[in-house]
Length: 133
Ligand SMILES: [Zn+2]
Image 1 (cartoon, protein in one colour):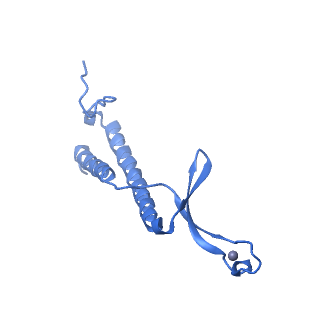
Image 2 (tube, helix red, strand yellow; image 1 turned 30 degrees about the horizontal axis):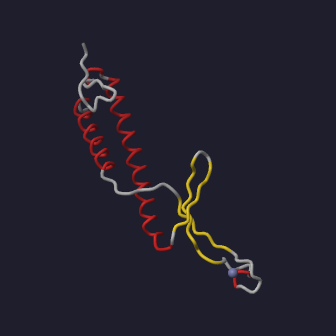
Image 3 (cartoon, rainbow, N blue to C red; image 1 turned 60 degrees about the horizontal axis):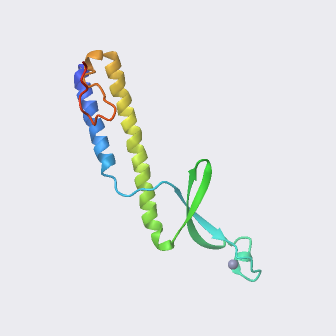
């Protein structure tokens, strides 16, 4: 079994890698792209038939804010770009989840072995070491 300090160094490297990757992410946005079809209501239109999906699709980007769903119309020429922005957001969520996971392992390791707790955290101290005295 490897000593905890080796594992800690590896975990901290992984944490730094994840933080760097997050900091380099391009534009992202949260939401679901939903195709919407509409019936225009004219009885003579093809959309009046039951099996016809209706006019469209137009795309809505929806997301939940304070338990309310807000929707934004996305122009057809922007759909692919928005799809990429949403994919980057999902990638960010995945990286963020891993970052928390690695951080939990680091915390557990330090709890198990208090000698590894070398860098006291200073709120707002941007990584500077705390003066203990
Ligand atoms: Zn119609």
